[in-house]
Structure formats: structure tokens, C-alpha cells
Amino acid sequence: MIGLYAIFRLAAVRESGNEPGEGVVLQEMLMATKQSVRALSSVAGLRMATEFPFFLLRRKPD
Image 1: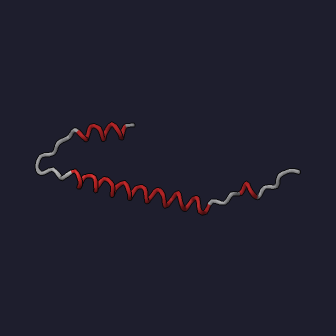
Image 2: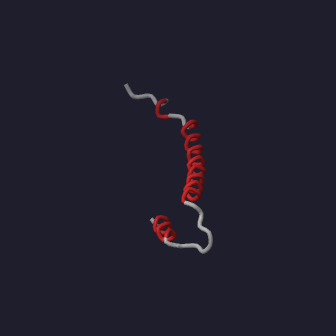
Image 3: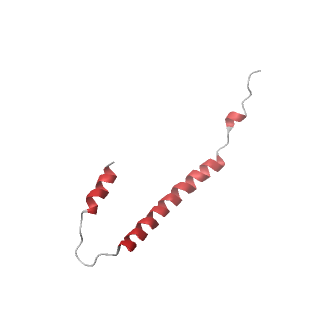
């Protein structure tokens, strides 16, 4: 929640000098997001691939 508020407040900040185009900003944001998702998905994917369902090995009482 704090992160969303920080982004909201930072959106109002105007820098002096040449402002980058909207396309450049979106491209940088998407690249950073893709890197984060790639890092998370590889860890989660690795955990899922190596996790063994041990509950299937338990014998059920007859």
C-alpha cells in the first residue's frame, strides 16, 4: 500500500530539463517489470518442478 502511494506522489514530480517521451518511460518500466517477473517465475517454476507430492506415497487405511 505504501508503494502505491509513493508511486502516486512521484507521478506529480516534474523534473527540470528535457523530459523523456512517454514511450521511453513505458519501455523502461516494462523492461524492469519483465526482469522482476522472470526472476520470480524461475524460482517458482524451479520449486514446482522439484517438489515431490509425498502425500501420494502414504498408504490409505483399508
